[in-house]
Image (tube, rainbow, N blue to C red; front, side, top):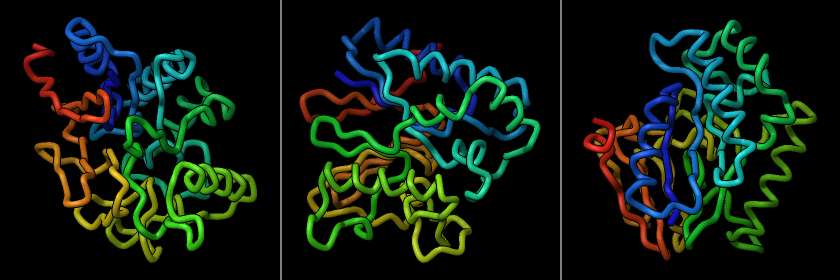
Length: 234
């Protein structure tokens, strides 16, 4: 069984409590983090530094898959659009803990149990005209994205569209807003990024889990269930 934890935003102590409580009740073989480890309203530099230390430990733990979110990339690649809450003081503190090598261990996506898991979701814009859309295509996108990063060019993976206040024609899997997101027929996706009160499903079979850590996902044999964390963390 896989445990899926959406956007963390420095709440690493709460995440540790959630993991401890759930692993007492379920046999968890893999923990998938959906990114956005940094930045929160009224947070501190110290909180972000502690989060970087926490994340470094998870990157070195084979039981974890650590995805990347839009609130993470700006601290290492200055030419990408920065998020609300980003400061140079936080950037210095985070980079005092995490190296660029560490940061590159963050994954852009993960396929599991018939689901594509990413921070904000792949729209139909990413369907290849000849290859369609599958794991080979997402790996190809990933390779192109990192090649663009090295050249300081902006790949569509990191585009921020008008739905999130950007200037691009659409948002990529770091920025896609759930309320305007149109998925890919036949591809079930699990995302975070858009905070709401309850997990939200759409007609494609996609689900957004970002609820301020009020809910997490449990994925087992191709079936996804959501679990309230409120009682677990009391």
